[in-house]
Amino acid sequence: MSQYLNYAIQLAKMVDGQTGINPPVGAVVVNQGRIVGIGAHLQKGDKHAEVQALDMANETAAGGTIYISLEPCSHYGSTPPCVNKIIDFGIKQVVYAVKDTTLTSRGDEILQHAGVKVEFRHKPEAEALYKDFFITKRQGIPEVTVKVSCSLDGKQATDKGESKWITNKSVKNDVFMLRHKHDAVITGTGTLNADNPQYTTRIEEGKHPIRIILSKSGRIDFDLDMFNQSNVPIWIYTEQEKLKSDIEHVEVIHCSNCSLENILKDLYQKGIGRVLVEAGPTITSEFLQSNYTNELILYYAPKMIGGSGDYQFFKTENVFNLSEAPQFEIVNSQVLEQNIKLELRKK
Image 1 (tube, rainbow, N blue to C red):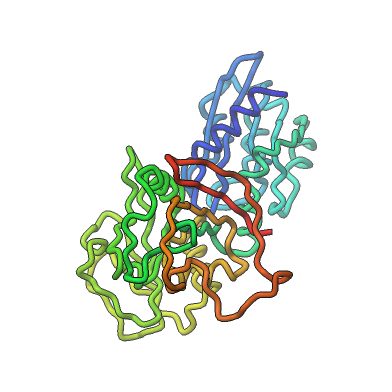
Image 2: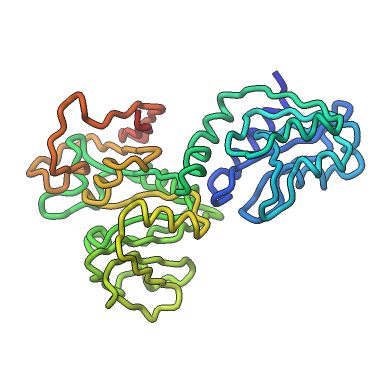
């Protein structure tokens, strides 16, 4: 087991959520038992992790080993292939943790042909980091996380529409970190009108996600707090051609068919690699019934709201047979001051 490969994976985790449609990658250059360069891919269009690490190492990279969380790229994108840079710097060996199954050419063969020894050391920890990236890159859509805060009986609000606050302050702080790790937040007009949310990230040096509003009706109240914040763009998807906005940071995107697929593909083309759905039962249920949800995060408060099912977070017109009901698996659980956080993936 190599601590240097573990360091590279930790660097990748540190930039997870800030690289857009590109994968988070970490790299460490070692020569004669000494770290001479480290790097991480900081944002889409910026230098890749391997290049950052090699530039830091400079001439001390020659004859050394580079440890990378993901197989180095071998294609021209917004930057040249990393395998070329590795060869040019005289690296003797490349060790990486995950094969990039989206690559059209084999970086291994290019490196080996140039006399560089290549070793693939499978790391489940790193594999989990890239699982959704591989899926969404092939589909051309962002990674989707659906977040729900609710009571034990699955209510996002009371029958009177009261929803602040079902869960506690620890959950609120955890959600701030979720937003920080996503490029954008998706919501609907129902949630906007009921809660007047801002969808900011109130943590130190936090990254505010782009706010995306889905509005088939086109009825938007531009006096809400969100529209008074000019620091983050707001994109409104609607089928109503009459909806317009003169607010500088607000863009209205008209679609003939505002299906989830069409919206998500458009977001991916705009460079959005990861979205967080924070919405009411209608939009939440639509995502959970679709094939586009990669992760579901449930925050349960230890209280029972009762009443009707109007604000149940999962509502469908069809009644599923048990054998056909959508199934999830719990991948992580945590107690946040008496509230329960469940992280789930669709089976």
